Amino acid sequence: MVGYLCEHCANVWNRPVEADLEVYDIVRVDLPGATLYGTVWQVEENRVQVRVSGDQRLLWAERWRLTLY
Image: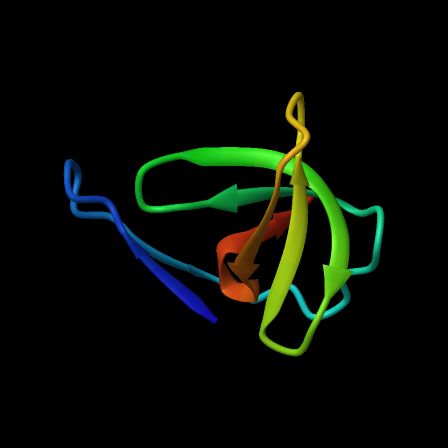
């Protein structure tokens, strides 16, 4: 589970970590300074490589930062 806290309104909520990600799934990646969207390119136990939409770059992100679309 990933916990969230809204600093503006003090709401708290949880969501499960995606366990069934596969290559070519579309995901949202919540990074500290940005939210990116892309396609899963490679899956490892605790991290996932994502090809960012509209860009040719690949980035690695921790699995808990991804939301499956």
